[in-house]
Image 1 (cartoon, rainbow, N blue to C red):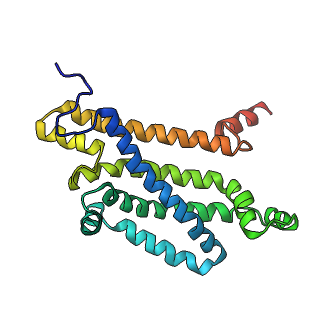
Image 2: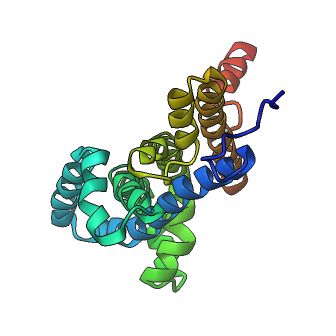
Image 3: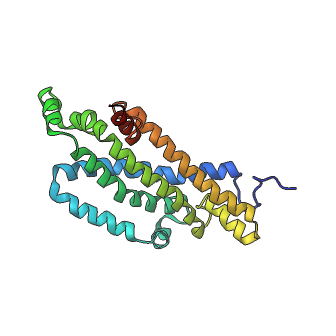
Length: 225
């Protein structure tokens, strides 16, 4: 009798191997999108006229269906992980750039003036003052981009073996095995929840000055007065 996590022979990875591949294909594009978004967002903050066209371009790219994006890239990257990861990195820009821009713009001018008076140059001020204060907005964008990317990786099953848990879903449909379908769907959902929880934990670590209980703590304090 097959175990719960036994995979068909056409799936070259074990279940946990597929989970690891799924995370790699989902999160590396988000990281690449973040590294690209940071300088682009800073340019948009400094050159306000640049923000609308950048936002328009990223929105148009986001509107391209993932399958169409894959088909265009196949001629250049083949049936590989890159064919899935490049669109995911591009899609993350539409979330991350506005999040970073809004977060950086929310930094009080008095704080920037104080940093300048202390001798901070533009780069140091951006890295040590603006980004830390903007961290909650940036991590909120990362949460949306990461969960979206984890769900979209499964579409890669349509172009071959680049869909990780999506390939298991495809095998479940081919072999009429509901077990594989449920393992794929539930596994993807659990991964999204865990990554989201880790990002929330990261926000707590990076922003110790923020209240932990949010609205609940505010209501408790108000009631105790």
